[in-house]
Amino acid sequence: MKTTHTTTRHRTHTTLALLLSGLTLTVTVGLTACGGGGRTDPATKEPVPLPSPTAASQQLSEKNLGYMWPLTVDHGTAECRKGEQAVFTAPDGTTYALNDRAEEAGYRDIDAVRATGDGGDKVSLGTLLSTTMKLCRFSR
Image (tube, rainbow, N blue to C red; front, top):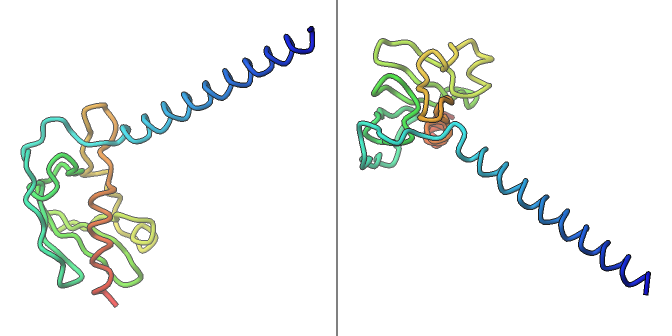
């Protein structure tokens, strides 16, 4: 009888531990996904789709990415340069690094023009970077 009680208690503790682990994972993933997200009130509520790229550079703006526009400037040029260096050139002509390869090549840190989201974190560069990396097939 004592063995059954101990086994039941062990199962209960194991189940509780698994539930807490799952909850922790869910909260962690949720926070990671939210952190660095977009803005709840961008100037563009319904983004204008970008045309399929045909060259290693492409003009884009806040109107194309809407909620996920990560910069304080409203437009510029995304470009994939030699060696898969993803860069963004602002309207003033300054070119910023979007990935490590571009940083290593000496381009300026994008944080100088990176927007802050509603939660106080910097807006994720993910959408802009993935859009820019699609241009790399034309840079070879």
